[in-house]
Every structure is written in structure tokens, then in C-alpha cells.
Length: 139
Image (cartoon, rainbow, N blue to C red):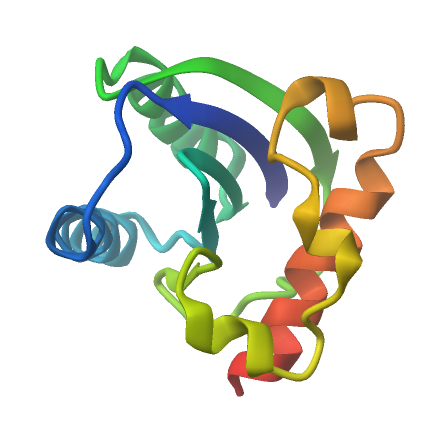
């Protein structure tokens, strides 16, 4: 199995309904391909982890990369894994722009950084730790 983490920038800020529409389609696509993961959105930036069979995750990433609704799509981490870390979700989601999130356990100054290649490329483990923190707080 493969775990792939990427970041991207939306071409425009998304409202709650647009985010829910993306989430709905993601969950449907991921269920059919046995892909699990977590999607974070903050300030027009996405961070997502995808887990599943290598060919399926790679094809899904290529589809995501070609989506005209975002740009600057960059892989932060791509690793073979023995077990899923996000096995319970076709796609969990957290909108970090939502003011209620600031009251969540696990919210910290760490979350003020943009989800960009420049921030996470030098330390992909940092992105993975953040995704795992949200996974644990969404249970």
C-alpha cells in the first residue's frame, strides 16, 4: 500500500458548500477505490493524505493534480506502508478556517503555517504529524 501526502492552493477561496461538494465527491470516489485519508483546508490551501493500493492512489493523485480548481500541487511525502493510519475514513475532513476549530484540542500555533510546498518539503514528517493529530481528534 501507498501513503501519499500532497499540498495545493485553491484558485479561489471556497465557501462551506463548495467544500462539502468536494468532500462528497471525494468520499464517493475513495469508497469505490478503497482509498482512505484526511483532507485539511485552511486559507485557500489543502493538505491531504491518501492511502491505498499504489496504482489506485497514483491514478487518483494524477486526477487531483489535473483538477483546474487548484494549483501548485506538490507531493510532500510518498511512502510504502504496511497498514493504514486513516483506515476508518473514505475521507475525513477538517476546515481549519472555521472559528470553532480554534477551540479544538490539538489546535496550536503550528496550524498558522500555510499548507505549501515551501513549508513542508524540508520536513514531511511535520505534515504527517499534523494529519495524525487531526485523525486522533476526529475519532
